[in-house]
Amino acid sequence: MIQVDLNNKNILVTGASSGIGKEIARFLMEMNANVALHCFRNKNSAKELAAFYPHTNSRTFQADLESPQEAESMWRKVLDYYERIDVVIFNAAVFLKHHTEEELSKWFKVWEKTIRVNLDTPALISRLAINHFKEEGGGRMVFIGSRAAFRGETQEYLAYAASKGGLTSLSRSIARSFGKFNIKSFTIAPGFVKTKMAEQFIKDHGENMILNELSLKELTVPSDISPLIGLICSGGMDHATGATIDINAGSHIR
Ligand SMILES: NC(=O)c1ccc[n+]([C@@H]2O[C@H](COP(=O)([O-])OP(=O)(O)OC[C@H]3O[C@@H](n4cnc5c(N)ncnc54)[C@H](OP(=O)(O)O)[C@@H]3O)[C@@H](O)[C@H]2O)c1
Image 1 (spheres, rainbow, N blue to C red):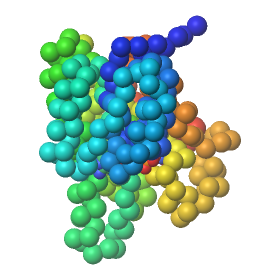
Image 2 (image 1 turned 135 degrees about the vertical axis):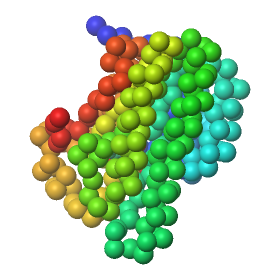
Image 3 (image 1 turned 90 degrees about the vertical axis):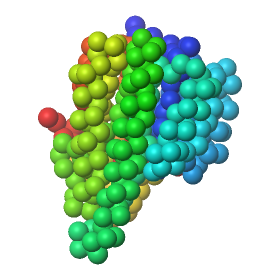
Image 4 (image 1 turned 120 degrees about the horizontal axis):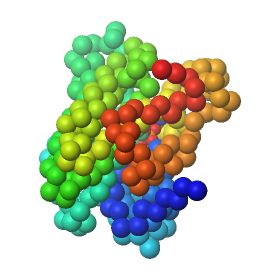
């Protein structure tokens, strides 16, 4: 039997106030981890979740991850509080539409924001984490990527798919470069997952269109992802470092 106990592990989850990140944070606290729940606009949501797990040393940290300064300051605050971080889950992201027929500067603004939040900031935090993990004798990173990096996205989401492609390469390069420092890095590539992020897509295309793409009968929900993250945090997946794990209900089998 596999038992995951994350007692004494300090884990930073970005975007822990909503959707997949919130469920990952919940699962990790359920497994007794101390979770630094990062949030941006929905601080109350993350705070309320942490309050359910008083036996863990979990608390919220607010930052706009479009700002490199705020991202670095958040990392310092988390480190000041916990002194040691064992795992970083890079989950926060934006999924913004920008149609190619829009005015160029408007289109490019969305491109820049998407790349900033979804790729630049995770890169900056991963750079800080690499140095910290080297000092501590190791650590793990999990990047929440996307099926979009492999299958491609529809034209309204060019920036999003590109950001996830970059994130996947970053994760793989970290795994190759720092394994000897006991640093492991993984990418999770979900397909469609029923969260706030996906609401607009459901409105535009309808749930049936998404269901028709799946080989399974039901849409993926955040709790289909969190157990795997728990296993990665426990060390049970270490020899899969560098891997991208698809969780897409059989909609894109590579
Ligand atoms: N849902 C899907 O179909 C799907 C598919 C493939 C991959 N993914 C990936 O899964 C991850 C989670 O997505 P989700 O569906 O759970 O989305 P979600 O419910 O919209 O949650 C997004 C999270 O990102 C945070 N965030 C957004 N902009 C931010 C900013 N500027 N600074 C800091 N934090 C920011 C939000 O914080 P606040 O709410 O506190 O503002 C929220 O916690 C993302 O990386 C996404 O790309 C999702």
